[in-house]
Length: 171
Image (cartoon, rainbow, N blue to C red; front, side, top):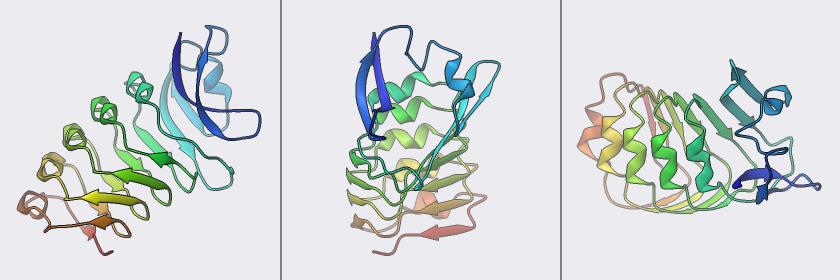
């Protein structure tokens, strides 16, 4: 058994344990769900937006979805931290976790996401500094980190990104 951020009967996202019949990761059933895009049975995109009245947190099991290219949990009432396991999703081109209640620091492991084009972590309650490791996201064109409680200066490594077009970091 394993766990993953899943909707319960009330539409809330919770971390639950499932047997093989209901497990997202080992089943092709998920490819028939709304807001999930698959390619040959591999989940490539999760897009859950504000039309769902959900709460919960992002499970560390998200790292098992290694084929994921796009992860959007926008205005879902998510709380807790961004799991470091997101850093193993090296095929991600878009990570949108904006308009939630995420806390803690931005994991340095996000710097491993060298295919990221768009990073939206705005309108959360993230603290600490912006990791210089984000400067390894060589495909990045947009960083939106505004509306958090970040401190310190923007690392020079981010200004050196060759494709960066938009950088939003206001409080």
